[in-house]
Length: 257
Image (tube, rainbow, N blue to C red):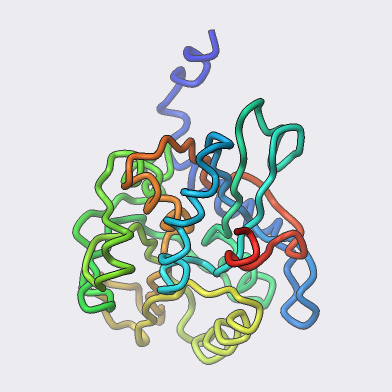
């Protein structure tokens, strides 16, 4: 019965991801001035005995900057992170890229999430998208698909600078470019990042066109650190755009070890 409910009326779910992004962006309350408020998390469930090795694999990805920040939160059996943690499991919450949408939105900069895709990295720099899925035309998070299908090479991209990672393509009004740049820099002071490339007014970014008076932005997928652990054969159940979380609960990855 549960499987049927998940699969039924799929035609009505097209565009669900884009709608969820907008709803969660509005729910973001993180304050750049105080560092207080809620951010959006992806939540990944792992076996309790695998927690240490998972953290070992996600650490180099975070240190390479292929993440929305070097912060995470861990919840164990009996605790709650977007829901109760099952018996024998641990939950790892990493910052979702929708948090950036939310922070910009609350500074009067509306962001349109256009595509989720596979981004080729070369010598540590974003080169091109090799696959794209429109958020408006899918019923499931594209980056979740790429990660679970084993199409990423996140750990290699982090350690060698060459590989494919999940990333999103966003647009926002060109008039807000300077303000957006300022906000992105201020987020780094709180250990949050994730912007791999910013375009120019009305100009293509990584060969992707943008609308008139718009600016393109490439943002790393929030599940990229967890993708590195998945690539090493660990059994991980990812829930993208899972829940909101008080920023104060997050800790640097080093402190989780």
